[in-house]
Amino acid sequence: MKALKFENGDTMPNLGLGTWLSDKGEVHDAVLEAIKIGYRHIDCAHIYKNEQEIGEALAKAFKDGLVKREEMWITSKLWNNAHKKEKVWPAFETSLEHLQLDYLDLYLIHWPLVLEDDVEFPTKGSDFVPLSEVPLIETWETLETIHQKGLARHIGVSNFNSNHLNELLQKAKTKPELNQIELHPFLPQNKLTRFCKDNGILLTAYGPLGAAYRIKMEGLDLPVLMEAEAVKDLAEKHQATPAQIVLRWGIQKGFAVIPKSTNPKRIKENFGAWSLQLDEEDMAKLDQLEGPYRFTTGNVWTPEDGPYKQEDLWE
Ligand code: A2P
Image (tube, rainbow, N blue to C red):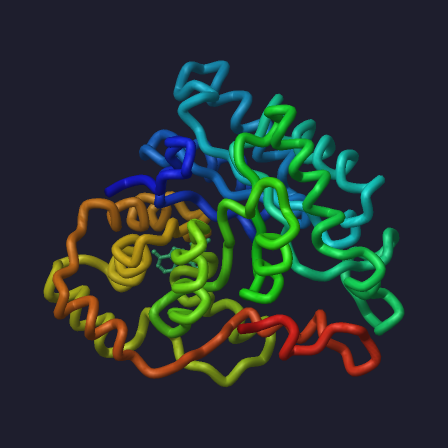
């Protein structure tokens, strides 16, 4: 299986290129390299601040005949300071313009929380707007209009738990079709993934390699997934790499995986996860790993004097 199927029959490749922390000056070539290797799914977001460069790479790929637009799956995400009704359209149009596209395949609400208009990242509680003032359904209604107009073929969310999803499921005309969350063998999120599956919501795994760079970035005292004994043993058994093993776990769980890399060798290596097959015993070994370990802590969203709490964020 190489794709996830939406209810209208559209398919999204279940292995894509992640672009968070892909530096300017590197991401252009990374996207072209990925397309040459065979990637047909690129995961983007306004806040990654590299959509312009990705747009240039896509335009070149289409112009040079490497791939056709309709063969690519391009996702982008609405940032937290653009949830207000009048802000959603301009934010969406900026992403389209930067990516040099006339439609997106998938547009997501990046986080279930709201920042003041002029705040990109919060430093204090007053930088936030509570959901009681700008409810998720209000933001979602504009995504529904974008979808109805055909400018985003599919719409969904990211970092939503079942409470956030329930709010939309109860009030929305179009249900969220996909939830993009942190998922890897150290954080299988069984309860939330079950909820999504039961409600026909597809899942994309971010940080599918175990997001080890977060350990440094957030000063976490957590183990490295790709160095876990079970992962290394399976890599040896399958003559594969640890990265391929953990990506394959995600694919066989029924998720789409979007490993980020700007390194041509690793971009190719990660693509190799498509040609592996883990058996039940292998999967069970990975399911039995210790944890859960969450690398995206969300601490930045939950200062003591702000309206959002850790228990509101995670399942
Ligand atoms: P780099 O861009 O230098 O390759 P995730 O997608 O789970 O968030 O992980 C992305 C991180 O993992 C990046 O730091 C990336 O660095 C690194 N990475 C990507 N592919 C591999 C790989 N095959 N083996 C080891 N590290 C990898």
